[in-house]
Structures are given as C-alpha cells and as structure tokens.
Image (cartoon, rainbow, N blue to C red; front, top):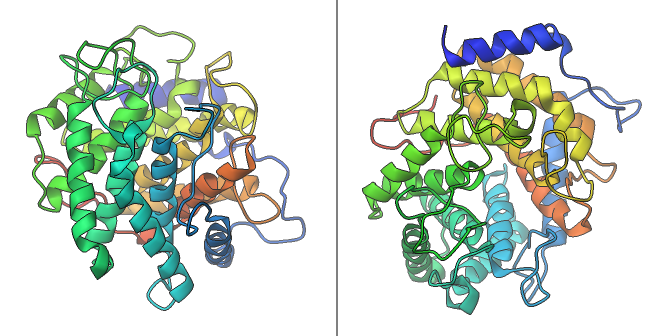
Length: 396
C-alpha cells in the first residue's frame, strides 16, 4: 500500500467518510443559494472590481501583502512586489480583461512597479541572510511577468523592462538558493553562503516559477532546479505530511498532517509537475486538506503565527486553497468535479459580506486573500502550470 493510501485510511478511521468530514461554518450569505456557477462568476466579477479599488501607492500601482514583519518600519519591498504580482495575475486571467480598459490600466501600472522594483536596494540578492522576504518578490514577481508573457499581454512600452526584470528575478532566485541542501527559505539560520534548512512552503512556488521560466525559453540553471526538487522530495514523511523545515521524519507540532496540509498541496503538485510525484500523492494531499480544513479555519484572521496544537499560521489559509485548486486540476478528469464543488463550498463559507476574502487581521491583506480565492475559483479555466523536464507535459 502506498503512502497516500495509508494516509487516506488513517484519515477515514479518524474522521469518518470524507463526505461528512468538511464542517462548514455559518453561511454569511443568508437566504442565497450555495456556491453555484452563478455565485462563482459573480464572486469573480465582484472580486476584480474590489481589487482595482484596493490598488494603492504611487500611481496607484501596487497591492502590498501585509503581515507582521516590517523593514525600516515599513512593509518590505518583497511583500509589495509579491502581493502585486499575485493580484495582477488574477486581474489578467479573469474573464473580460481585453474589454476592460480600467483593469488593463491598473495592470500596466503594476507592470511598471514590478519591473522598476529591481532597482530597489532591498531587492538586491546579495544580502546577509536571516529572516528576509525579498525572495517572495522574486518568485511572484517572476510568475506574474511570465504569465503576462505566456498570454501575450505585456504592454509594448514595457516589453524590454519586463524581460530585464524576469532575468533579474531568475538570477536572484538562483543566487539565494540554499547551499548544499537546495531549495529556498525566507527564514535562513545564517548567512546566504552557509547551509540552512529549506522551507517547502517557499520552495514549491519558487520551483513552479522556474518551471514556467524554462518553458517560456528563459535560461535557467537546471542544477539549481534539480536540487530544489530533491529538497522538496526529501521533505516528505511516511505519514504523508510535508515538514515545516529540515527533512525526513523529524515530526514536530508544525509537521503533523493537520498543520501541514497547505504545504502538502503545494509540494505534491510541484513534485508531480517535476516528474517526481504521483496523482495518488496529490489526491492524498487534497483529501487531507478537506479532512483537516477546520484546523486551518480556526487560525483564519487570528493573531499570532505558528500556534499549537499544529503550528498553523493564518497565512497558510488562502495559500492552501489556491494550491488545493491547482492540485485538483492535476487529478484525472473524472475526479475533478466533486473536488471542485467541495473547494467552492469552503470558499463560499468564508467569503466576507463585502465579497472579499481575508485570512489576516490586516484590512489591506484582503487584496491577497481575494486574489488567491478568485484564482482558485477560476483554476479550471486557467492555462495549466508548466512542467519540468520529465514532468507532465500537460496538466490536463
């Protein structure tokens, strides 16, 4: 019996049938139907309108992600670039982009901001290490520019700057790779030139951005990618969980399945795209997410970070829903409809009265939560993620 089968058997024994495992909270849409196709379409449209209203900064040109971390008492540039990349990626992929001049202008300002960010002193990949989030800016800034490139939506006047910025982000990710162990982390235990434990939570999206870069024809250091894949693979445990940091079966409170479901989804989807995973492992991660969703929800929009008993931080919440949506689309076609419906129910249950989603205590981070949620709802209609070498050539 494989790892995912053992995991599913344990989940079923502990929680009963999966159909009864998802306990939805009180419905904020009293008197309305459940998450129908009409609700999904309306939520995406409303989400896009709200995201445009949330754009801020000079221009306005950005959608900063906000957490507790500050640099020079300000939201760090990595969060500003990464958040902008995520929101703008949602805007360009939602229906009606070509006909929506307001949206196109908002995205054009975002492109200029993301491209210009490479000149910021705190985006330089030569830094001292320790806790630093500029890597999120590299990963999601790159992913945004590559999605624009794939969809042939880069504004002509920014085409040269976009190529330069993409090259900068690729090089930066390669330069901040963890020596010897491979992979990436936003919380290094020492200088960049010394080994540190990789973070699967960060390694998975970094790898996916580099998969996309190579697929788009950009030169990527294949050894860096292969080491990252190996680091991600080594983070698996016999229980099916993905460790928070380090590797193997060093299970702590933050490495047990209920607290690991977000990174399980990201890791297993990425490993399948890399040719080092299986649909069975992806399915096991999706099932674990559904069974243990309530542990994520307990920490949604709460203070603190890695809180017992499972070390769940609020910022795993919509990250997990996005990667659940991606993982579902990597399963066999006949399996997807039920899982899509289950995911939509969960997103429906936590949508706020104004149409946004937010997993932090900061009002500003509704931009991130809303973008990740509508990307999850749109996932069946989005272009599939790029595979790496021996990985899937087509995700569906």
